[in-house]
Image (cartoon, rainbow, N blue to C red; front, top):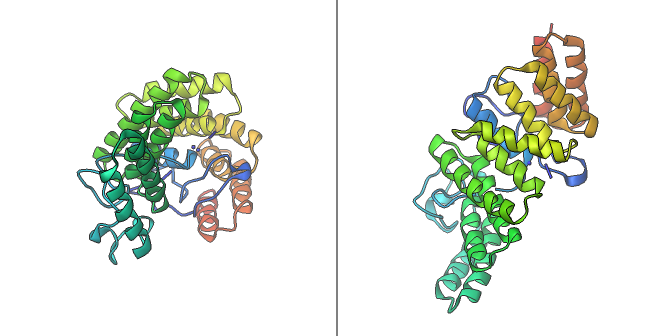
Length: 306
């Protein structure tokens, strides 16, 4: 998440997607709970922190796998059991079929890149983020630039944030890391790319590298909301609740309307025994949203303080 997404397995996510003030980043489609596994926290953190991300070997949904980018025209993606965020309307399926044909018939690299851009836009509209990433990568290969590499990386990163299996987490996170690294070769001061790269490492075999990148971001921009949030999540993962409290305190100082920051400040304060302060943070989170699911989650957490 520039600055802080969501495929949890064991914990019920309770809050609807919440857009933070200033359009800085989009919160996850739910508030994750502290007893989630480390991999679940990492993926949720990625989705919480960023509104973009995608990958070649999956179709971008939470429930389906494939051997390559799967068109939204696929029958099994649009039936009664299709994931809501991957369902395409008949008009969208028709448009994708047309664009895929244009891409296949493109006579030269320029025409192919133009068709790939249109395809990526349409795949994003039906939330097929990995397919969008694939075609945006084709654009970047034809027209290499930091901007084009980042668009492709962001799409893969979004699909990573929705990944529902360890295999897909590794695949999509790896692809995002590969492309963000290309961005940073051209733009070493790109803090958004570095933050996302750090988050992609959080669910990898080398999370220490992710911490390094996030610390570098905070050295350059101590007010970076996404980096503060994810450093807080890392502290939660390692049961360092005192450190997590400090990160979330810093986050809500930067943006008092950061709903997830307030919620996790409450969670971590509760873990350190500061019950009254935790209650106030939970109530602040509740006051910032009209979502009844978030309100229910806050009441649940407050009840545990008694």
